[in-house]
Length: 361
Image 1: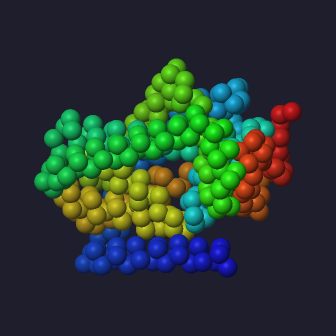
Image 2: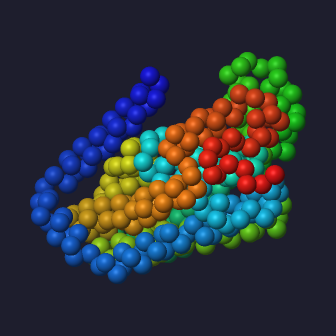
């Protein structure tokens, strides 16, 4: 019943987004949208897709650095498979399940303890947020804003400052939890079941953040993160221009946080969020033709972003011997991380059926 409720909520959210999208753009002829799709540059979209897929290289290097205090020498291939299958799961299953599948796959194949594996993904996402907000701040503070966005310059600068403070504060809080983990674990022993579960889950997440305490590793993590997001920004910028919208690279950096929030909405197939944000901002902020703005949202989300993972993901599942049943089981195992004490389930690798199971002693 709980799973059905979550799926119903996700579907309802997608329907609301699409209804809102229809109301905003209901005056556009479908033929105009089709014409905008047909006139998009295939070469530009291909380059944008390649850049967006290439961002996984620095992303995986960053993940290797984050896990290096726990397990050195993890190969590129198992991490690549875990990342691609994780993205594919996120795009197909509501609830961002891919964020749990990714560390669980690596835990099972490389015998990495589950807590640090999940914690490294939490650190990964926090550094993503920090980098994204930092690039946004650079865009709104350093360069003049364009189009209608310029009228909201003061508001955007305020938002950038607040977001930067929130992300940095969250990162500091988790690092503090990691530092005082033993004391907190003792304190949780006398708390209620719910409080203990929440606390132990948070502590388990911090087990993958050791790299952020080490200056050399922290510099590497931040460097890979900046490269990763600059590739995403370049791919998005080229993709938008390939769809016929004249936009500067600086304006793309302004759009990125909104687009990231759009794609994070947990709807089936990620329907609604990203292309609604893309179409509305391109039309209202940068004066793009409404039909071209809609076409850009559709092509960039479904062709540039999702299609490569929906093609590569099933191939890698066959190669690695992973089934959908296994992926859902992995998600359930990770969700139970806070049920045991910090040193128990968090310290054990996940049990992964099939070919992905323990390749290391």
